[in-house]
Image 1 (cartoon, rainbow, N blue to C red):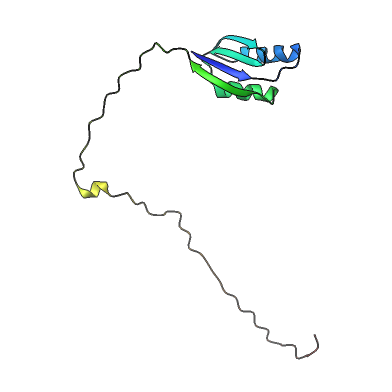
Image 2 (image 1 turned 60 degrees about the horizontal axis):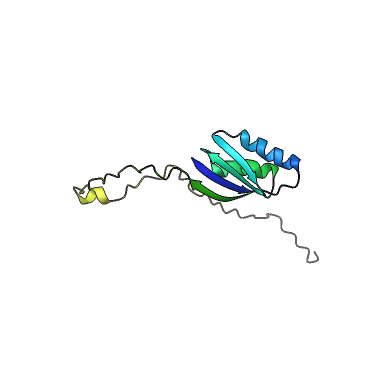
Length: 123
């Protein structure tokens, strides 16, 4: 469970109802309340996605804070992984793959030769 606080600019009852309706449609919302210009949502909701959805309807929606309400749950113990010793130096070398998409550059030089040169000196 998370407690998410999102700041909105609410100017009327219509905006207030629109914000509450938008948050109520999100999956995982347990409760919501509007305290002044801050919307407080509790539940298992992605805070960034919820803020993005609100930002489409309220351009000045900003995520203020996210708190985890499950503080009494113990974290599982992390078991250290055993260290593996390399057998030879060949295992430590990087793997090199051939370049399969190699296209040689083709550079052609064309010389233009005029067989009938213009002998007029005024051009």
